[in-house]
Amino acid sequence: MRAVDQAYHTVRDGIISGRYPPSSRVTEQDIAEAAGVSRTPVREALRRLHGEGLVEFQPNHGAVVTDWTDVDTDEVFELRAMLEAHGAARAAKRATPAQILELRRLAEEQHHHSLLRGEGHIERIGELNSRFHRRLQEAAGSPRLSRALSALLEASLIMKTFLKYRPEDLERSAVHHLEIVLALEARDSDWATSVMRSHILAARGALRR
Image (cartoon, rainbow, N blue to C red; front, side, top):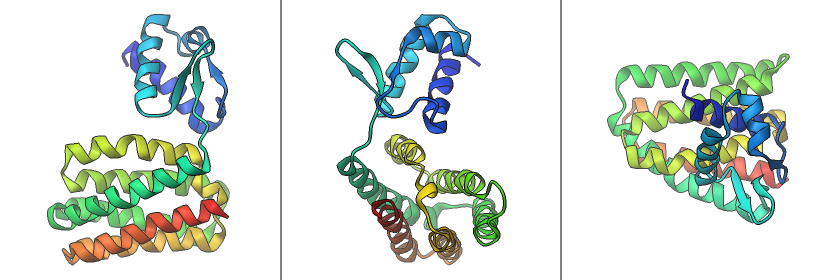
């Protein structure tokens, strides 16, 4: 792995895990030591993270982990509702049978964990959810859409949406994924659009509680 990528993933994973909480300062020296690289690739990694909205550069403080306000959160989910609904519509027309099969497998496994709710189920559901959305994004076949969504999906990971979900929220989210797969199998772009928009807005509603 390149030094820049090593530094990037060290900070990104630290933000997602909570090791670097919102509003905390992230110094080049600390990252360099944690990632085992020099400070030069750290600067490039921080610029990349800044471009994705994960860190901000503040005068006299350097890089600081972004602290998401309620307004920021609303905007992220509104943008996701528009863009991911568009992606679902494209995927309904463009997804290969193999891609749809993979999406069904992910959706069914997520549904299973949403019902069973065993040890570590939140982390597992979060992982499956992320993979589902990224695979659906790939199935849409639009590099422009993928670039536009990348930072928004990262932001959602940091918000740790599933930690605020009630059991019925977890099940509803998984059922939405299953229905999206049904829409893809039927090649029905309007159906896929409708379910995806409802899915994203329901996630925003859970965060607002």
